[in-house]
Image 1 (cartoon, rainbow, N blue to C red):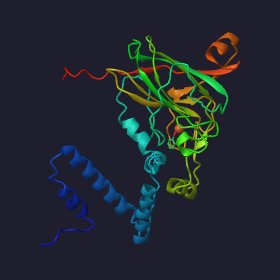
Image 2 (spheres, protein in one colour; image 1 turned 135 degrees about the vertical axis):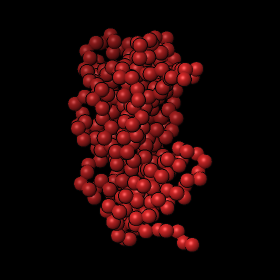
Image 3 (cartoon, rainbow, N blue to C red; image 1 turned 30 degrees about the vertical axis):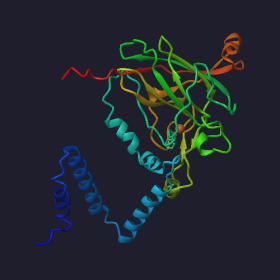
Image 4 (cartoon, rainbow, N blue to C red; image 1 turned 90 degrees about the vertical axis):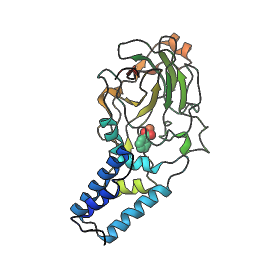
Length: 294
Ligand code: BEZ
Ligand code: FE
């Protein structure tokens, strides 16, 4: 007997083919994927040529990926899927720092640096100081919290995009908060930049009249013992594209002023010219649920 496979019965046939998968979550994921994909096909009725084009697009997306280029993350980002995954996983206490997308450029380990060091190894832009504290939701400081920080240079490129022009580790640093959970480091004020457009994702944006720009930001992954890590950004208040980030990743709570500070002694103590720009970003982590509680 042949499989009963028509536009009406296709979905049940394929969902049923996964019914014996022993992992219930895998079954749930695959049956959801099949149901939504089939509904998509029934709704838009792609021609064979269009479906071939879609497969060629996905193939090119994979082929564009290498050790320092992640076109699939960018595809997920520009389709709003990365941010939607953040939203549906956002079961946190209100006080905890909001997360946002990881992006495709956290591909290399950040070099460990001492508090106060600069991550701007080339002196590419306007110097700034970033300071803050890592605390738990009840305000308890988290000494020894680690902050993995990365940002593009003043021209909008990450070190991995320009291996012949930027020193490795430029714009990156792994910092450890002090005994009171405080951290501080020097950098340059980030600028808005376009996500890479020389691949299939860029072609998709161009074909649909969308711009590729992201507002100025610095990336953080913050971890502390007994707490849920957070992957987030600090966005520069007043930056262009805050209202139209190409990857939908701006949250109001993450936008911070980079204020001009005129304090010659402090500037000298920090190794900064005077005046300098300063941003403060306090990070609140949520405790991991206790393993013993049910
Ligand atoms: C980034 O901020 O590094 C980024 C995020 C999404 C797509 C491309 C770049
Ligand atoms: Fe970025």
